Image (tube, rainbow, N blue to C red; front, side, top):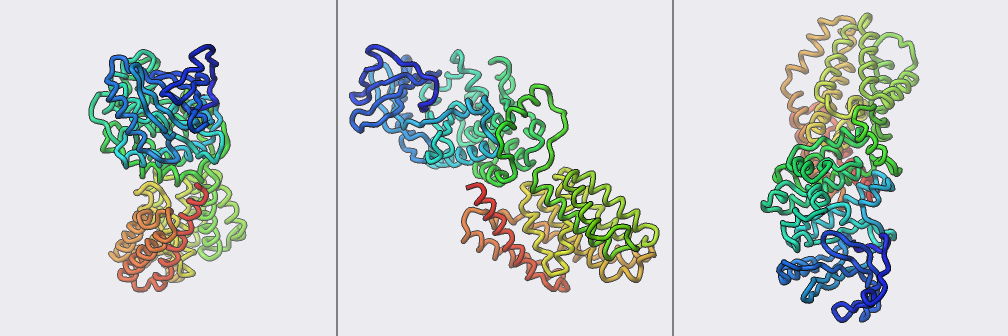
Length: 549
């Protein structure tokens, strides 16, 4: 690899003084692999250190090897090791590249020196590098940790991808080379391993395997030997979330999708990059998680998951506190606790154990309301019942969160909830959270306007409070509008440039306000809420982009 920090061997005698291509003086050998020997060399024309790789072409077509090397020279990207020159003689092809001082990703993974945030930043850089290459018609076909260099100097970039075109240089029969079959095949897309046409999707698969290994500490394809590895190629791989239950579900899902056996199912590099970028702020910035997860993988999955991330806990706490404070303040009889104290207890409990605390909070609230305020209990039960049904597979922190929409509606900003739920990565979760936010708004209005007439009469509460909203097609229609708005938000506000985000938020907010106002004219502040939602969405995305920079 083109790195000056790997174990080196000083070559004495004539070999270390050889002049290659009448220009490059060999200094010392840096390393060797299945595709050639890498030397530290001195460019005597430009007086600089370079990495020179010698690739033997015995039994190969030298002109083909040179054409493939020249293809890599068309690439110019900060995430790709620059190829300065390619040449040949009767025995070998020579690739002269920039000398990157750093270590390879496989070394850093083995030593446990990367945090989850480091891994995601490296992944974003590699997505950018591969998109650049694919845009110029170059498919790497050998993305693996050994071909990723992490520079020691931050100014040199987050990560650099090297060895473009080498797999093509040696041809597809490289799969049978002794000692390389495991190292290459363990990262190879099924269609490439089978000798079929492989394109951009093959690089996406390989990169996702690299990220899987970097986050989990184990390669899900590699077996005990070449035969075991070959049997796993093309099979469905264990979900990353089984090994790293502390990682964001959306991140795990994006990587799981990118390693699907069929190329057309994997999505795109842009999809994977967005998921990595969105999750950077949510993952740990301390090294050691990979070594811990490797121990868990070897010892078998099944131990308790790590606690939720701080942002998840805060979201769960806010929703639970808002619901509890509102209930204690004006829903039922004289409370045993002051609203502020009850809100603090509920918020802390849902921050620590989101699902369990939500269920306990809902049960206690309904039990407290049931005897003196059975009518209110009926409406509250109808309001909270859809949450576990629609969010069964979502993060526990989302269960409490839709309750935030009801207090926001009091000040005319109920639609601002959509800016929050629109950040969920899974489409179904975004849509469900958007609809549940509207349901919370409707429930809050029913309780606020009519509870005095049927507070202690469950049957009347059902007739006058529940049946009118359940049977009103407009209520369900607005729920659909909010679901679509939450679903579509990432398409309009992407967090890449402020100008396009503001324009997208304007269009998105206008459509949301128009749809809500047309179906529910009594919404009143629909325009204000939609505007606030657009502004908040832009701020959230801008914050995420800033954190990822």
